[in-house]
Image (tube, rainbow, N blue to C red; front, side, top):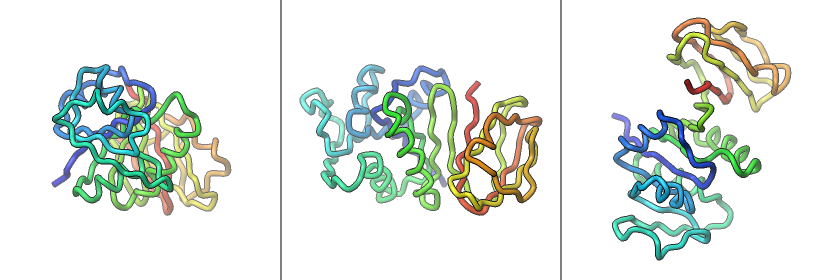
Length: 204
């Protein structure tokens, strides 16, 4: 059985209705450092606050929140949060507020979810996209004509797709931009890849 946690990072505050519903329904919300400011603005009390806490006003933190201070400067606060989730046996993660504001953090966070691909099922949610790191063969449901983009970090990655307008048949993406702006032509599609790939699905 999946054990779900919602992580809120210190990026752009979300407003998409689907994300708002996920936050409303969540039983376990973990704030990554000053992601606490985002939940404060949304009048949400999280379960846990984790990080080096150098950018959080601890006096403003609700007393019911478990504060987990991790000072290892060799790890980002988000990476510390992922390790915490593994320790607590969470298996599925919705990551909110990890995009926007800081381009360097955006890229590092997306690279980071590929690193944890074998231990955590992580879905990054922005107001524009749902982003997953995938490996092996996986099937996804979506609305027909949903915009789909595939970005492979590895140049020699063999990719096969089915259900997209421009399918791949055990092919290598010739550049990081070749897989951009595809479309789902059915209500589901399949991706098979040898090495991790980033899948972007436009939120409706």
